[in-house]
Image (cartoon, rainbow, N blue to C red; front, side, top):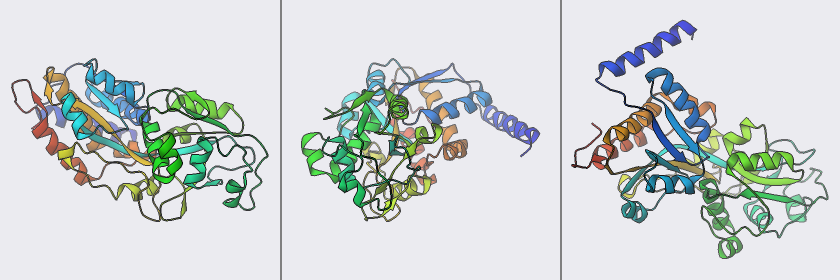
Length: 348
């Protein structure tokens, strides 16, 4: 597409939105998960160019996002660890998924190409438990015949902050390792048996890049953007798979979304020979009863625009856009659930 055609298309979109009677308020604010930060930044840039409305997002981790929306210091919160229906009800919140992606183990291991090292889920758990401490451990070597593994100690890197990425990662480890489930469990913040902590996906990525013979976990977009070395994983069907949009889609195809339970869904360790085992959705949190109705409408407009026009931007960053039927379900939930303090629906 030529620059002129692209410009005319943008002008046409903006004109269509304006002719539909959409009036724009000031900038909107959000905070939370670092997992989706790359795509939220891209969406915000494109949305502002088309509408003039800015979306300021603080990438502070899912735990921080939940705290900020509960304190009403932002217009929306973001979390990769979905809140349960009971938690949502207690806080007066509703949630909806925004995009789907994957968490990937990343390594700094000389002589090993990206995607070359294969790991089993139980082996991965035992590395993070501190039970497997050398890269040439027989259990790692068993799945990597012909690969020269160094006789070097493994340095574990994990998140230091409350993190939805950690929730996804540790939930998976709890599903594949009884030892992990019993001693550590799955949550946004856990008591790590070993390792060094980094803040945010960016912090973990930075540590792994600097520390030789290290292993950590980040959202796939961070691995790609930072040209990091990632591993294959053995999935529930016993197949070694690589992280990519196809393997994320294969896992997400098993989801059974339900608006009535706040779209609560966990996508780790899903069946299917092509499924990436550490797949997850990231979620947006907003109040059902909105004291700042105009701000809430702007939040919904932003994500409606993202669902309508942001799929290619998401795909370019290796996220999986939501399927059309799920987007329709989300729009229907907005109409029923999000209201002003008088009880009037804010989304038509």
